[in-house]
Image (cartoon, rainbow, N blue to C red):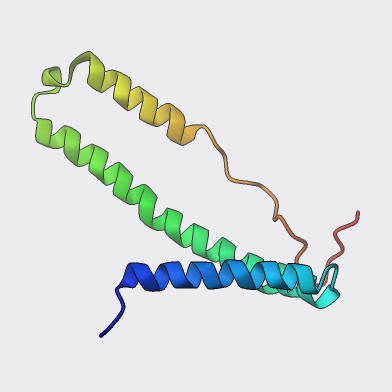
Length: 112
């Protein structure tokens, strides 16, 4: 019998958390561990998050547009619709992406 996807995801999450804690306790201040985190884990995590945002943002925008378009008459939207739309615009525009990398690229010094 095959395990459901959500069970496999939770097992992977638990395994990753335990492995991270064990590595942090077993190898504190290890240059190899710091290198692996900075040059492998961070870039993979950044790519994953950017791909996730590339998927989620168009879905949210298209859901809002389709919801308003299916409403038909804009007057039916009323005051609550305007408040909801303004809230969505303000909240989604509130945070700007970082302008610098959280880590120094390979071959550069983080001290200036």
